[in-house]
Image 1 (tube, rainbow, N blue to C red):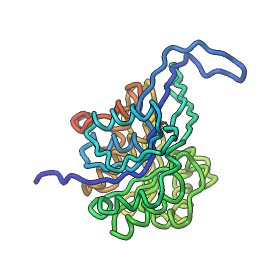
Image 2 (image 1 turned 90 degrees about the vertical axis):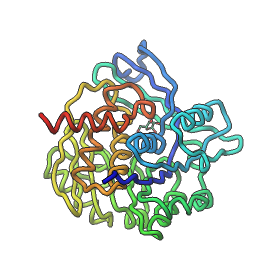
Image 3 (image 1 turned 60 degrees about the horizontal axis):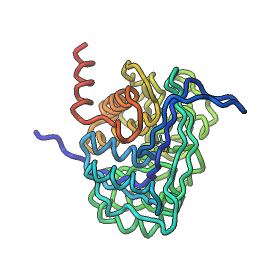
Image 4 (image 1 turned 135 degrees about the horizontal axis):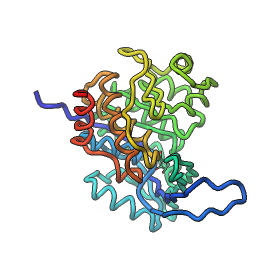
Length: 313
Ligand code: RIB
Protein backbone atom coordinates (compact mmCIF):
# COMPACT_ATOMS: atom_id res chain seq x y z
CA UNK A 1 0.00 0.00 0.00
CA UNK A 2 1.31 3.48 -0.86
CA UNK A 3 2.49 5.56 2.10
CA UNK A 4 -0.12 8.13 3.22
CA UNK A 5 1.25 11.66 2.77
CA UNK A 6 0.46 13.72 5.86
CA UNK A 7 -0.48 17.38 5.79
CA UNK A 8 0.97 19.73 8.39
CA UNK A 9 0.18 23.36 9.12
CA UNK A 10 3.07 25.12 10.84
CA UNK A 11 2.27 28.40 12.57
CA UNK A 12 5.63 29.82 13.53
CA UNK A 13 8.66 31.95 12.91
CA UNK A 14 10.94 32.75 10.06
CA UNK A 15 14.30 34.03 11.32
CA UNK A 16 17.43 34.96 9.37
CA UNK A 17 20.26 33.05 11.02
CA UNK A 18 23.60 34.81 11.26
CA UNK A 19 25.81 31.90 12.22
CA UNK A 20 29.37 32.45 13.39
CA UNK A 21 31.73 29.53 13.82
CA UNK A 22 34.13 30.20 16.71
CA UNK A 23 37.09 28.23 18.09
CA UNK A 24 35.59 28.76 21.57
CA UNK A 25 32.80 30.80 23.13
CA UNK A 26 34.06 34.24 24.18
CA UNK A 27 34.14 34.99 27.91
CA UNK A 28 32.64 38.30 29.14
CA UNK A 29 34.75 41.11 27.68
CA UNK A 30 36.75 38.77 25.44
CA UNK A 31 37.10 39.20 21.65
CA UNK A 32 37.55 35.97 19.72
CA UNK A 33 38.71 35.63 16.10
CA UNK A 34 35.93 33.66 14.43
CA UNK A 35 36.33 31.01 11.71
CA UNK A 36 33.39 31.90 9.44
CA UNK A 37 30.05 33.71 9.18
CA UNK A 38 26.97 32.66 7.23
CA UNK A 39 23.52 34.23 6.64
CA UNK A 40 20.76 31.70 6.02
CA UNK A 41 17.07 30.85 6.50
CA UNK A 42 16.16 29.68 9.99
CA UNK A 43 13.65 30.18 12.77
CA UNK A 44 12.11 27.33 14.71
CA UNK A 45 8.85 27.38 12.74
CA UNK A 46 10.48 27.54 9.35
CA UNK A 47 13.15 24.96 10.22
CA UNK A 48 10.44 22.54 11.38
CA UNK A 49 8.33 23.21 8.29
CA UNK A 50 11.33 22.55 6.04
CA UNK A 51 12.20 19.36 7.92
CA UNK A 52 8.62 18.08 7.62
CA UNK A 53 8.42 18.96 3.91
CA UNK A 54 11.69 17.24 3.06
CA UNK A 55 10.60 14.25 5.16
CA UNK A 56 7.63 13.83 2.84
CA UNK A 57 4.74 15.87 4.26
CA UNK A 58 2.63 18.48 2.55
CA UNK A 59 3.36 21.64 4.54
CA UNK A 60 1.55 24.95 4.89
CA UNK A 61 3.53 27.68 6.64
CA UNK A 62 1.94 30.61 8.44
CA UNK A 63 4.53 33.26 9.29
CA UNK A 64 5.38 36.94 8.94
CA UNK A 65 8.35 38.80 7.50
CA UNK A 66 9.48 42.39 7.70
CA UNK A 67 10.11 44.75 4.80
CA UNK A 68 13.87 44.47 4.60
CA UNK A 69 16.65 42.60 2.80
CA UNK A 70 16.32 39.62 5.17
CA UNK A 71 12.79 38.88 3.95
CA UNK A 72 14.31 38.00 0.56
CA UNK A 73 16.19 35.13 2.21
CA UNK A 74 12.81 33.71 3.30
CA UNK A 75 11.14 34.19 -0.07
CA UNK A 76 13.95 32.49 -1.97
CA UNK A 77 14.06 29.65 0.59
CA UNK A 78 10.32 28.96 0.26
CA UNK A 79 10.57 29.15 -3.55
CA UNK A 80 13.45 26.70 -3.57
CA UNK A 81 11.61 24.30 -1.25
CA UNK A 82 8.38 24.55 -3.26
CA UNK A 83 6.48 25.82 -0.20
CA UNK A 84 3.33 27.91 -0.57
CA UNK A 85 3.70 31.57 0.45
CA UNK A 86 -0.04 32.18 0.62
CA UNK A 87 0.13 32.66 4.41
CA UNK A 88 3.59 34.24 4.55
CA UNK A 89 2.58 37.74 5.59
CA UNK A 90 4.57 41.00 5.63
CA UNK A 91 4.62 43.58 8.41
CA UNK A 92 4.67 47.02 6.83
CA UNK A 93 7.99 48.73 7.66
CA UNK A 94 8.70 45.81 9.97
CA UNK A 95 11.91 43.95 10.60
CA UNK A 96 12.33 40.28 9.72
CA UNK A 97 13.30 38.10 12.68
CA UNK A 98 17.02 37.49 13.07
CA UNK A 99 19.30 35.43 15.27
CA UNK A 100 22.95 35.63 16.21
CA UNK A 101 24.19 32.07 16.53
CA UNK A 102 27.60 31.16 17.91
CA UNK A 103 28.75 27.65 17.10
CA UNK A 104 31.67 26.19 18.98
CA UNK A 105 33.88 24.51 16.37
CA UNK A 106 35.33 22.22 19.05
CA UNK A 107 32.11 20.88 20.62
CA UNK A 108 29.46 21.65 17.91
CA UNK A 109 27.31 23.24 20.67
CA UNK A 110 25.62 26.58 20.11
CA UNK A 111 24.40 29.75 21.79
CA UNK A 112 21.60 31.77 20.25
CA UNK A 113 20.21 35.26 20.70
CA UNK A 114 16.97 35.57 18.76
CA UNK A 115 15.05 38.73 17.82
CA UNK A 116 11.58 37.59 16.82
CA UNK A 117 10.55 41.00 15.35
CA UNK A 118 7.79 40.62 12.67
CA UNK A 119 6.98 37.10 13.87
CA UNK A 120 5.40 38.62 16.99
CA UNK A 121 2.89 40.57 14.90
CA UNK A 122 1.09 37.59 13.33
CA UNK A 123 -2.57 38.15 14.20
CA UNK A 124 -5.47 35.86 15.07
CA UNK A 125 -7.18 36.92 11.82
CA UNK A 126 -4.13 35.92 9.79
CA UNK A 127 -4.31 32.45 11.32
CA UNK A 128 -8.07 32.34 10.60
CA UNK A 129 -7.35 32.93 6.91
CA UNK A 130 -5.72 29.49 6.90
CA UNK A 131 -8.75 27.80 8.52
CA UNK A 132 -9.48 25.72 5.42
CA UNK A 133 -5.88 24.38 5.49
CA UNK A 134 -6.24 23.45 9.17
CA UNK A 135 -9.55 21.77 8.43
CA UNK A 136 -7.85 19.53 5.85
CA UNK A 137 -4.56 18.84 7.68
CA UNK A 138 -3.46 16.07 10.05
CA UNK A 139 -1.17 18.01 12.40
CA UNK A 140 -0.82 21.63 13.53
CA UNK A 141 2.74 22.33 14.67
CA UNK A 142 3.62 25.37 16.80
CA UNK A 143 6.51 26.82 18.83
CA UNK A 144 6.98 29.96 20.95
CA UNK A 145 8.61 32.48 18.59
CA UNK A 146 5.25 34.10 17.76
CA UNK A 147 2.90 35.81 20.23
CA UNK A 148 0.23 34.13 22.38
CA UNK A 149 -2.87 35.14 20.37
CA UNK A 150 -2.08 33.43 17.05
CA UNK A 151 -0.67 30.43 18.93
CA UNK A 152 -3.91 29.96 20.84
CA UNK A 153 -5.95 30.49 17.68
CA UNK A 154 -4.00 27.86 15.72
CA UNK A 155 -4.31 25.37 18.58
CA UNK A 156 -8.06 25.98 19.02
CA UNK A 157 -8.75 25.75 15.28
CA UNK A 158 -6.88 22.45 15.20
CA UNK A 159 -9.08 21.13 17.99
CA UNK A 160 -12.26 22.47 16.33
CA UNK A 161 -11.52 20.05 13.47
CA UNK A 162 -10.15 17.20 15.62
CA UNK A 163 -6.54 17.59 14.45
CA UNK A 164 -3.35 16.69 16.32
CA UNK A 165 -1.58 19.61 18.04
CA UNK A 166 2.20 19.30 18.40
CA UNK A 167 3.83 22.02 20.52
CA UNK A 168 7.57 22.61 20.74
CA UNK A 169 7.66 24.95 23.78
CA UNK A 170 10.80 26.78 22.66
CA UNK A 171 12.32 29.13 23.49
CA UNK A 172 11.04 28.38 27.00
CA UNK A 173 8.44 30.89 28.19
CA UNK A 174 4.87 31.20 29.41
CA UNK A 175 2.30 28.93 27.78
CA UNK A 176 -1.39 29.43 28.53
CA UNK A 177 -3.53 26.76 30.15
CA UNK A 178 -5.72 26.73 27.03
CA UNK A 179 -2.74 25.83 24.86
CA UNK A 180 -1.46 23.17 27.26
CA UNK A 181 -4.88 21.53 27.65
CA UNK A 182 -5.25 21.29 23.88
CA UNK A 183 -1.75 19.99 23.21
CA UNK A 184 -1.57 16.38 22.03
CA UNK A 185 2.24 16.15 21.96
CA UNK A 186 4.60 18.51 23.77
CA UNK A 187 8.24 18.23 22.68
CA UNK A 188 10.63 20.17 24.95
CA UNK A 189 14.37 19.54 25.19
CA UNK A 190 15.81 18.80 28.63
CA UNK A 191 16.48 22.49 29.42
CA UNK A 192 12.95 23.48 28.46
CA UNK A 193 11.51 20.53 30.39
CA UNK A 194 13.39 21.75 33.47
CA UNK A 195 12.07 25.29 32.94
CA UNK A 196 8.47 24.07 32.95
CA UNK A 197 8.75 21.41 35.67
CA UNK A 198 11.71 22.32 37.85
CA UNK A 199 13.10 18.80 37.31
CA UNK A 200 16.76 18.59 36.36
CA UNK A 201 16.97 15.64 33.98
CA UNK A 202 19.93 13.35 34.49
CA UNK A 203 18.50 9.92 33.66
CA UNK A 204 15.38 8.02 32.66
CA UNK A 205 13.64 8.33 36.02
CA UNK A 206 14.12 12.11 36.23
CA UNK A 207 12.89 12.35 32.61
CA UNK A 208 9.80 10.38 33.63
CA UNK A 209 9.21 12.69 36.59
CA UNK A 210 9.42 15.75 34.31
CA UNK A 211 7.06 14.05 31.84
CA UNK A 212 4.56 13.32 34.63
CA UNK A 213 4.60 16.98 35.66
CA UNK A 214 3.95 18.04 32.07
CA UNK A 215 1.09 15.52 31.82
CA UNK A 216 -0.37 16.97 35.03
CA UNK A 217 -0.47 20.36 33.28
CA UNK A 218 -2.96 18.93 30.80
CA UNK A 219 -0.92 17.88 27.75
CA UNK A 220 -1.76 14.39 26.46
CA UNK A 221 1.64 13.03 25.45
CA UNK A 222 5.23 14.03 26.21
CA UNK A 223 8.45 13.57 24.27
CA UNK A 224 11.59 15.04 25.85
CA UNK A 225 14.56 15.34 23.49
CA UNK A 226 17.87 14.51 25.16
CA UNK A 227 20.49 15.30 22.51
CA UNK A 228 22.61 12.35 21.45
CA UNK A 229 20.96 10.13 24.08
CA UNK A 230 17.77 10.19 22.00
CA UNK A 231 14.40 10.94 23.58
CA UNK A 232 12.26 10.00 26.55
CA UNK A 233 8.61 9.41 25.65
CA UNK A 234 5.55 9.06 27.82
CA UNK A 235 2.62 8.68 25.46
CA UNK A 236 -0.54 6.64 25.08
CA UNK A 237 1.34 3.90 23.19
CA UNK A 238 4.92 4.10 24.52
CA UNK A 239 6.80 4.72 27.76
CA UNK A 240 10.57 4.93 28.03
CA UNK A 241 13.76 5.89 26.20
CA UNK A 242 14.14 5.76 22.43
CA UNK A 243 17.83 5.89 21.51
CA UNK A 244 19.32 8.32 18.99
CA UNK A 245 21.91 7.58 16.28
CA UNK A 246 25.64 7.81 16.75
CA UNK A 247 27.07 10.42 14.34
CA UNK A 248 29.92 12.95 14.28
CA UNK A 249 28.23 16.29 15.08
CA UNK A 250 29.62 19.53 13.65
CA UNK A 251 26.69 21.88 14.40
CA UNK A 252 23.76 21.04 16.68
CA UNK A 253 21.74 24.16 15.82
CA UNK A 254 18.25 23.21 14.66
CA UNK A 255 18.52 19.55 15.73
CA UNK A 256 15.40 19.95 17.89
CA UNK A 257 13.60 21.49 14.91
CA UNK A 258 14.63 18.57 12.71
CA UNK A 259 13.15 16.25 15.35
CA UNK A 260 9.86 18.17 15.71
CA UNK A 261 9.35 18.47 11.93
CA UNK A 262 10.20 14.82 11.39
CA UNK A 263 8.04 13.61 14.27
CA UNK A 264 5.07 15.61 13.02
CA UNK A 265 5.52 14.29 9.47
CA UNK A 266 5.64 10.73 10.82
CA UNK A 267 2.55 10.95 13.03
CA UNK A 268 0.70 12.73 10.22
CA UNK A 269 1.36 9.56 8.20
CA UNK A 270 -0.14 7.49 11.00
CA UNK A 271 3.05 6.15 12.60
CA UNK A 272 3.01 5.33 16.35
CA UNK A 273 5.25 7.05 18.91
CA UNK A 274 8.23 4.69 18.76
CA UNK A 275 8.47 4.58 14.98
CA UNK A 276 7.84 8.32 14.64
CA UNK A 277 10.48 9.16 17.26
CA UNK A 278 13.08 6.87 15.61
CA UNK A 279 12.31 8.51 12.27
CA UNK A 280 12.67 11.96 13.86
CA UNK A 281 15.92 10.98 15.64
CA UNK A 282 17.31 10.02 12.22
CA UNK A 283 16.48 13.49 10.88
CA UNK A 284 18.10 15.16 13.87
CA UNK A 285 21.20 12.95 13.59
CA UNK A 286 21.73 13.78 9.92
CA UNK A 287 21.14 17.49 10.53
CA UNK A 288 23.91 17.76 13.14
CA UNK A 289 26.49 16.36 10.69
CA UNK A 290 26.04 19.52 8.57
CA UNK A 291 26.45 23.26 9.13
CA UNK A 292 23.25 25.31 9.18
CA UNK A 293 19.56 24.94 9.98
CA UNK A 294 16.75 24.90 7.35
CA UNK A 295 19.03 24.33 4.33
CA UNK A 296 20.58 21.17 5.83
CA UNK A 297 17.40 19.32 6.79
CA UNK A 298 17.62 15.80 5.32
CA UNK A 299 15.44 14.42 2.55
CA UNK A 300 13.24 11.35 2.94
CA UNK A 301 15.65 9.02 1.11
CA UNK A 302 18.52 10.04 3.44
CA UNK A 303 16.37 9.40 6.51
CA UNK A 304 15.28 6.00 5.23
CA UNK A 305 18.88 5.09 4.39
CA UNK A 306 20.04 5.85 7.94
CA UNK A 307 17.11 3.93 9.43
CA UNK A 308 17.77 0.92 7.18
CA UNK A 309 21.47 0.95 7.98
CA UNK A 310 20.73 0.83 11.68
CA UNK A 311 18.07 -1.88 11.37
CA UNK A 312 20.48 -4.20 9.56
CA UNK A 313 23.33 -3.74 12.07
O1 RIB B 1 16.21 26.11 16.82
C1 RIB B 1 17.18 26.80 16.07
C2 RIB B 1 16.64 28.12 15.64
O2 RIB B 1 16.41 28.91 16.77
C3 RIB B 1 17.57 28.91 14.76
O3 RIB B 1 17.38 28.66 13.40
C4 RIB B 1 17.30 30.35 15.17
O4 RIB B 1 16.67 31.06 14.15
C5 RIB B 1 16.43 30.27 16.41
O5 RIB B 1 15.15 30.64 16.16
